[in-house]
Length: 441
Image (tube, rainbow, N blue to C red; front, side, top):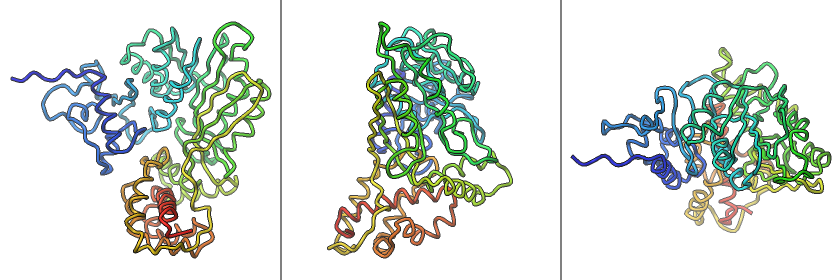
């Protein structure tokens, strides 16, 4: 009998990374979710079983059991040589690990923070595990006891359990005993209307900044003074924020924070979506927690709330703060908002440029923002190409690109009140492809 291949954590992660590259989903933590949506994800049976897709067909271990993981309770993933878990409870709040968490992990690894570290909102524990590889101690807090347990499990899987010290605590009452060299945080930032129940993993209060604003108010005393010997003190944070075309709403408060602390802050936004899209995702996740309220009703509640706030966009960004002159620099690397532009017919008709538009559109799918596949579907990706001519004509006729989307995709939006909002994102990419191909100017 041929011996079974050795199933190491690195082999497991390598298979996941290869599948991410093939599916063009470089930051998708749960490829099992992607495969169920019809995306082209190929995983060996033993990797698929550990990842929660299907039972192994070879009758052997899924690979997770070999690590001593209770696969009835935890689902396993891997990224950048690290393992991480989430709970298997469906339809209820639990451990969240999304694309934003993997992007933040990349940011933390690039920053290479030193000294004594505290992480606020440890979630799955993957960032804490990364920090513990080069730190003697990482203190972690999370308000959810399930996340505290997940952090401990993730630390054990990565061989750093003795360096990760996780505990349950509320940021609003947290008072660290000693200053830290680095404060790391990935806090919830979803704007949630009053009266709407929402998971603590995402609820950022009415404007989304409740916890983030509190951290900025208290963080300076938590950081070791720059004048003392040791690594340069830093704040590393992943955040989501409502905003306008000029940038996130949080920028104004970051400028005040930078001036008070004599810190230079770099802010890089890698994702920006229309508030309408964020509202669809919010309504999608709020559904199980608000029984008796339809998706259409939840969506209207979110839309009315966003309209009252007067914000057009929802940003996902990473910031790094360190001692300096008190400056804030903002960079937006997200896909341009073509729906905000006024279009007119270009030199080429759709029929002549159709193949070029299709290639350009498919090439832009790598610009899909964080969270797209949490509510979006393959239909939202495929539909714009089937209505290319109609959409190009509508963009040329309407001063408002959002109105053009609402007109051309009205049936899709009516059939899928919440998740259908993802078509605004793919329609924006198609508008860019139509412009690049010369169909629109």
